[in-house]
Amino acid sequence: MSTVTIEIGDLEWFVVMFVKRLSRRIVATVPGAKTVRATLIRARARRFLRDLAAFLPPSGGREFAILVPPGLLAMLAPWQGYAAGDVVHLLTYRDDPADVPTWITHVHVGATARDVMADVAGRIAPFDALLDLRRADPGRNAETWLRASDLVDEGGVYIVFPLGLNSARIRQAVQALDAAMDHRRRAEVDGRPAVQSVVDSSLLSSKLVLSRGAAFQITHRPSRFRFIGDDDVEVSLRDEAGVTVTILDELPAGTLTGSAAVVSHESSTPKPGLAATMPYPRLQLRHYEGQIEFLGQSLLIVGESILPDSHRFYRRKNNIHPLHPLEVAVPGRQDVVTIPSIRLSRPPLAGTYYLLDPQITGHYGHIMTEVIPRLWGWDLAKKLYPDLKTLTRVRAGRSQEPVLERLLTAYGIDREDIVLVDHPVQLESVITASAMWHNFAPHFAHPDLRRIWDRIAAHLVDPSAPNWDRLFLTRNPAGFRSCHNTAEVEAVFRKYGFKILSIEEYDLGVQAGIASAAKVVAGFGGSAMFNLMYGRDVQNVIVLNHEKFTARNEHLYASLLGAREDWFWSTPDTDEFHSGWTFDFDRNGADLEALLASL
Image (cartoon, rainbow, N blue to C red; front, side, top):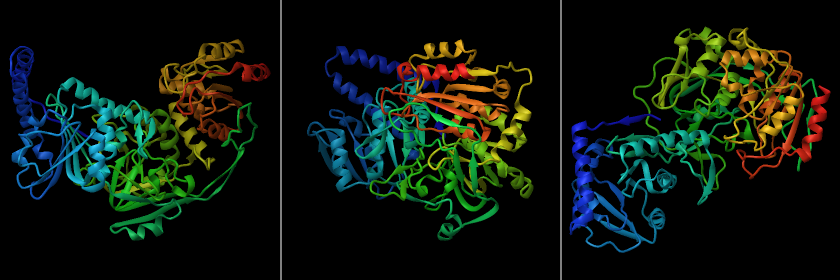
């Protein structure tokens, strides 16, 4: 997400802060403090409106709503000149507002802010703009934004005026919005996806930050988009004007059969997704030309259609709800979603690009399992289009993605051919490759993926890396899916000659070198285990995790390597994928030690 920052002069800011501090003393000691406070609020609102005016909808026949907390009607005054000739709805709550300005067209009162918004959403909205004049709170603002498809019209804006929020706090809030994308802890609020504890920035489209002025703007596009299935691209795109698709190459379907046993140890219920034989579909290298929107996180949109290359689970249930973080399900519909509006760069990026973008921006594990499995078409595409560049979205303000760049250059892609963008862009020509890896039912991995791994390893492995035959790749006990008795688990593996490693602390080349020499790789399920990619002689893979751990990446790695797998299951603290857990020695201890003693 791109962030626009408007700095206010230091001298001017000093004056503002001086007045602010003085006002606090006046409010505390002088009669008529409320009048003084209201005057200061109006001054701040005028300043806010002046800085924000260029980003508001154009004037003339607009209809917008202003959400005002009780007792703060003084904040409305600066908006009168801006709203001349418009239909203005005042939304307030808890008590009947007094002294409503005459230029307010309609007044709506509810018991709570949520009640009054729900009332107008069902009868009057959507509006061209919703101005939220409550004290800013990222979590509350996100909940409001989740309802924006009912409150704000297509192309409209949701604007937050963070009364009392200083520049440091607003920067923290924006950082929280960006960081929340990595967490994506979701619940259901009023039947729509929401979040717990953190704000999901995937549901917040574009932010305008006024540093020191302390505000951010969110723009909304509630259009509905249909999925295009991976088998239906050519037929489905005939309905979309201005775009063509050409199939540059195709790999036939087949079946991967692992050469060793898969053992799932005791669990409360059978664990799916560990089949020794896995069919894989045909894979295509596609070239799209026309008006294409790239929103980041691999999401590609043409007209009102979402391209199948947008989803890492692109074969999930005929592409019904493939679980993309930027998509919001439409209640009662399984074939369409809504996507928040995101401002695209103008003009479009010239040239042809090869999409190598994970669904979770900058995440090591997602790069390893979503970008690398799409490299198989690069050589042919580069031969056909010599000026071809790769395309990856990075977080706002970043100009590097070290892990990704290291892996791509190890594969043989020139650094000058790697293009990183920190904002959504419009494309005129993009090439995509069906992923060779699908970590969701139907699970599959293409056998040719090992050639890609070997090619990267040949240029990445550090020959000076230390070697151990037996590795236990531990996990940070303070993070997601933490094992509460990690120390006791490590002690068992140490007893049987395993080297305990937090492998992510090493240089990427050293990580590859360590993994390439191992014969037995054990660990808690997760990204550290993805170093199996570099294994040359791995014979056993041992995975420890809780029963709500539904990912099967380690199974796909072991299947391609021909290694025996042993999975040990314990009970999670909660029913969530990211739950913490405790290794169950009563259930698993004896079997684990027997296995380790036999190696």
